[in-house]
Length: 196
View 1 (cartoon, rainbow, N blue to C red):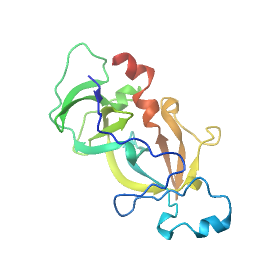
View 2 (view 1 turned 30 degrees about the vertical axis):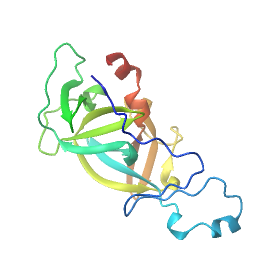
View 3 (view 1 turned 90 degrees about the vertical axis):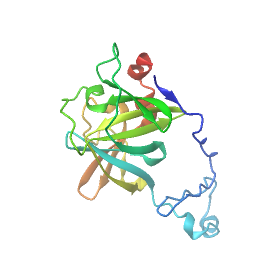
């Protein structure tokens, strides 16, 4: 029931300069820069701002997934329940002509499950042709997070135990602490793969 999407573009080659498709898309510098003179030859629009992340909430915690893995944000509607599946699988949905599984992220992570409300959203998340829809409490914003704001050393940050296996670290944005979720660890976790 998990959807494989052959239309997902492949990752850029290491060291390639990625050019965004719209305003606000971060630019990535070539990996082969070795001196300040090399930097002077890179166009100004290629300056690193940070990667874009979609920020969402679960139980009043802010989490984020890289925007490159988000196919869309929808209202929760028209989910077809299916029998004899894991309790955290709500059902399936017709996602732009393809069938995709819908997972309640709270239930999947072993958190308290609450009734859905008008702010509840469905995130279509993809990684390596795998697409799954995650039900989250709400979506707040798309934000560019510079690498300097990210702490990957889990000893320095407080990440709840149920989120730790799927987290890349924490981003400090002003006074906010946002847990960065790894789409590959989430979609290709043993729990999801066992369900597939």
